[in-house]
Length: 93
Image 1: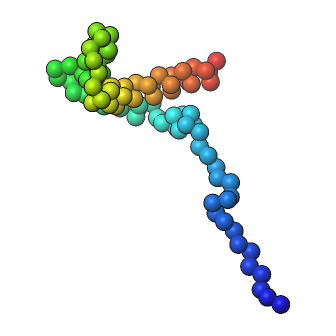
Image 2: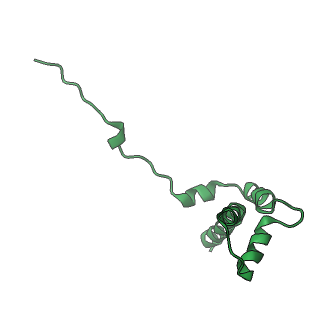
Image 3: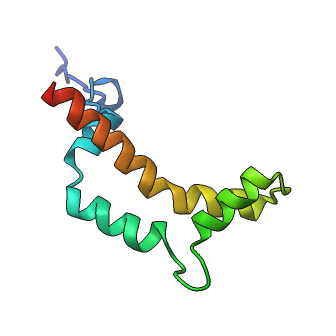
């Protein structure tokens, strides 16, 4: 009689998935506000990149790939702030 070995495969076991909104709920307000003030508005002189990119977008100027990357990078903190505000209002109401 042989010895039976019970084999377990970690890749087949269910994992606990964290939903993206749970991650946003865990981010503190001061961290989001600091990210908006620093990354979102950098560089401060002569004008913030996000403001420059918004003006380009509304004027119809062509966007290069670097401009799209800049817009997404500097706009991300404001997007996270907007989602957090909406979720906080929805939970309170």
